[in-house]
Amino acid sequence: MKAYGNPDSLRSAPGQVLFEKSANGIARITLNRPEKHNAMTVPMRARLMTLIHQCEEDDDVRVIVLSGNGKSFCSGNEINEDWGQRVPGQKRMTLTMANRYASDLNYGRQGFSQALTRCSKITVLQLHGYCAAAAYFMIATRSDLVVVTPNSKIGALEARFLGPAGAVSAVHINRILGTKAARRYGYTGAAMSGDDALRLGLAHSCVSDEALHSEVNTIAMHIASQPLPLLAYYKARIRAAESLFQTNVREISGLLFSHFLQADQDEAHFWTKVKESGVGGALIADKARLAAATKKVEAA
Amino acid sequence: MIHVTETGAVATITLRDCEPLSRHDIDFAMQLRDAVRDTADSNTIKAIVICASGPDFSPPSSPTDLLKAAEMFSGAMRHKWHAAYCAPSGLYQNLAYCKKVLLTAVQGRCAGAGSMLVLCSDFTVCASRSSFESPFATLPESSLVLAALTMRLNRAKSWMLGPQAWNSEQAVQAGLVNRAVDAALVSSQAQTMAQLAARMPLDGIAMTKLLAEAFLDTQGVGQDFDMAGFYCDSMAAALHARRSQQRGASA
Image (cartoon, rainbow over all chains, first blue to last red; front, side, top):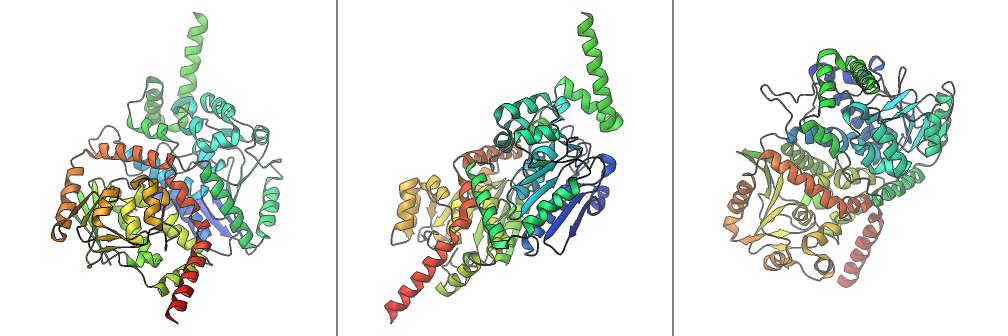
């Protein structure tokens, strides 16, 4: 399929998603866009998918470790991005384009979240700092083992300005957290700490920031020491169980429609500010707008 | 080996025949997957017709080729087989969940993978002398769920367990095929049906296919493909047993 993106994001992707394979069967995929908390562009996600497929075909790889450079694992998808969808004279995205973005470039059968979910190799996520939005429901809830730190901030943090989309309805999130917790974190946009993630069952272990790398290494080395057929057997069982849980069912129609339909006032305000001053500026403006609204209510 | 042409909003993918798919030619499967995926991603294409230039849409593979294939999908190459045929990004899920309306135009015999292409497509036009063999005896990636949804459960069982291929009349009656016409008219009928489907607005097709995808998913089509890896070993054993039986009979 056509490689979507703009010349800059396409050119940058190889340096923003690093790959390293060690002799002991551990492959490391590292997000490397620290200045943006590793927000993933369309070409970055395409590269992630390519690397996952590459690891699947490589008999030397027994386990894949996902991590991020900088202060956070990943803040989600890059939302202020031209990925080739802009058509001169067209005011809003068509459903065909929204479907391409939501399905093919993200959550559908062609998207990388499915490549991760149904990966034939064991995946371990090394999670620190923010793991928000798409990173939460496309990576954290799709990896086999998740190792966090107490300072982690995990969840559908974008729900404050973009709506909960798949964060409430995603089959994975409901299976992993339980329906009440999935809804609480989905609708409120609250951040789950590392301890919360461990208590709710998302995380395999929670260790200090200093111990994170070594904890993940220990887990990865243990897995890599197992015979390949045994690991393949485990993954076949996991794939079958996930299939019976219907995790292949589309779960992100909310995002698709939010790209297609007219935005409500709150969201429209956010997007207007994104155009004016970028995502960071929009977040600050959003906070100010909410504070002003709260003050008004209190005064009344 | 695979040619793609476009006429207005209809794309036509022409193969010699589907036999390489039946004997698990991975490269061929990926070429066809790419052709379908790229065509479906076009902003101008609304319907896709798959047809064959050879006399048979999908002639059966030789027992020797099938045994070689069985060694592949039950051995070290299992991952490649699964990725090419069964995975979400593999051939059959790209067909069954295609973003555009998918048609198959069948001439002559239709066995193995050809029958899977028919099951995965939205419409099928065939020649009145075409025959349809069940894919279940040779392909572990074939979907019984898709067959049961297409022609109802007991008919799918009959097709799987029955001794003979179905003729075009039986295929139409079962709901496997929409229309059987004179061999000379198969191509034009398929193009006419594709043009009719292409009258729908592009976003209308996108929405309809999204809803159809949800329906197929809740009925277990994706699950059946996920489980294909579990059918491999028994399929390989079955092919070996059949080969021994045939040798015994000829000796």
